[in-house]
Image 1 (cartoon, rainbow, N blue to C red):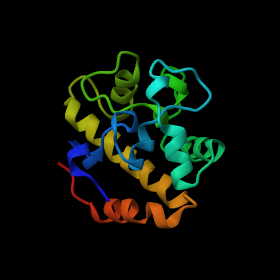
Image 2 (cartoon, helix red, strand yellow):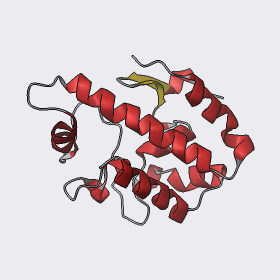
Image 3 (tube, rainbow, N blue to C red):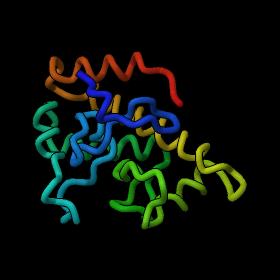
Image 4 (cartoon, rainbow, N blue to C red):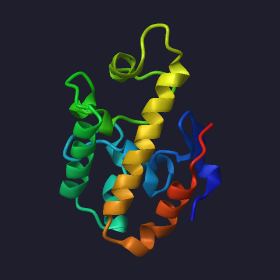
Length: 155
């Protein structure tokens, strides 16, 4: 079940999982990177283990994230892996260009950062739900999916 000590209340996503590499649950696959690239934190990456637990191949994972990205206009060559679908959870500024792209999509210089974050994180939650719905290990993902489908409030 959900270990709430390993969650964060984000704008647009109550009880969002912390990253998998820091001990978060499988819902955090929504924040994981694209497979096949060398990562700075590859020694602590648990994406492959999480995908195996839920019954998704890396190819299926990429297909779901890429389709979500196209559906939500998240493809952009300026962000890591060329899609916001692969961007991380960082709330206090991305060292690359994610935040600039989010401002272009969801606001302007006068839009409060929290409003833009709410849009980003609420869509990441939708991506999480999409990944869980497509998982083949239905019994394993069931409590996580039910939690998200019943967790309609956001901070």
